[in-house]
Each structure stands twice: as structure tokens, then as C-alpha cells.
Image 1 (tube, helix red, strand yellow):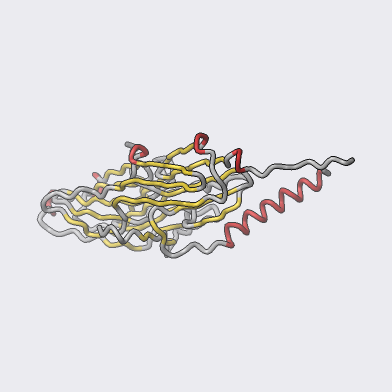
Image 2: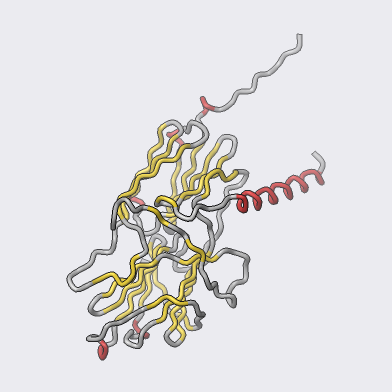
Length: 147
Length: 138
């Protein structure tokens, strides 16, 4: 990536899931990279402040939702003099194509980065797999491992 | 101090905290890594979001009142036949310098890196602290 373009932006999620939210907090949309490999699709999401305990990944039909809870940290008796980012939870929703083997999706979290490895089903390996970001909720839980 | 005074002080403090958070308009884009700075009379706390970096790849240096963060965030290495379908995460070498409102006791700076968030505690230098001069009556 271009060295000079170091500008980043923390965007609020456009469609925060209402059902799960029990606290008044902001919800941000994590920045993601999606890498297409021959055998799998890899989704990498920046979720600083999130670990395997505070992360929920749900898959309902072809909708994959990632939701990370973040504890807001405010130093006591200090005032804020520079504020470049807001603190809040993370949520992002992806629509998986039929070709992804839903039973073999693996998730790991390390240093605030979520990595989802989604293998392409044997029968579909020759076809191209599009993934697009969307905004709907999800239900089933997958296992999240820490590395 | 009266007990009720203390309660009101706490309430005022909480109110102030809420205002502090609301008052700041966060700029739409900032230079990586995004940083928040909190200060009190003799202490500063810097928090910054640097997900995906190992704490060993981070360099923190303090000279008087300036704090410099250096590091490298590596992109996922691609092999033959692999491609980015979407790429939003910034990667590369970064240097960021922040000015504190006072000189910092560099020996006493502490840093903690947890879940991709870096927390730095910067005490104000003893020599920089304002001194109280007592007035004697004659």
C-alpha cells in the first residue's frame, strides 16, 4: 500500500444490530481485508480492544455477523486533550456465497485482529466466490479460538 | 468537606466526563495509529489503537515533552494466485509524535499493550511541576 496514504478512519456501523444491544454504546464497523486463496477465503478485521471472550460470531443461513464488545476505558481524574478515535463495540455483517463450507469456518483473534478462515467446499473450488458486506443479524455461534 | 458536597462534586465530575467525551468532534480521518491523550495536573495517559502488531515491533521513546511511537504493521503476505478482494486495513511503517503539555519523567513511563490497544502512562517530570511558595507573615 502507498506509504503516504496513512490516513485512517474509524467509521460507525451503519446498521447496528438492535436485538443484542443491552448498553448504550457506539458501534463501529471494523476495517477488513478479504484475501482470496485457492482453497479458502480469509477475512481479517481490525477490532482493537476485543479478544476471544468478547467476540461473538454468528452464522445464520448465509449471513455471517461478527460482533465484538469493548470495555470503555476512561482514566480517572484526567481530561481529554486529543481525541482521534471513539471507543465502542464493533459489528460487521457478511453474506457468504454458497461455495463456502459452513462447517469448517475457523476464527482466531490475536492482538485485536480477527482472522476468519473460510474453506471453499470441494464441489465449488473452480468457481469464483464473491463476498459482500451487508447489514442483517445472525443467530448460530461458531467457536472462537485464541492464538 | 460536607458529605453532601462530596456527592455533588462526584456528580459534577461525572457530568464533566460526559461533556468531555461529547465535546470533542473526532476528525474524519487521522494518521495511523489513532490516538487519544488524557491529562491531569501531573500525569498523562496516551491510548492508541494498533491492532495486528506485536508489542516487540513497537518502539516508544520520550524526550522531554514529546512522545514518539514507531512500528511496522505488516500486510498479509500473498502467494501466487492469491488476491485481495477487499482491502481497507492500513499497513506499513509508521512514526507518530505527540506533544504532552509538560515535560515527562522518562524513567517512569510505563506502557502496556493489550488486545491491540497500547496504553502509556506518562508522569510529569518532578522538575517541571509547579512549586508552591509559602508566604510567611512577619
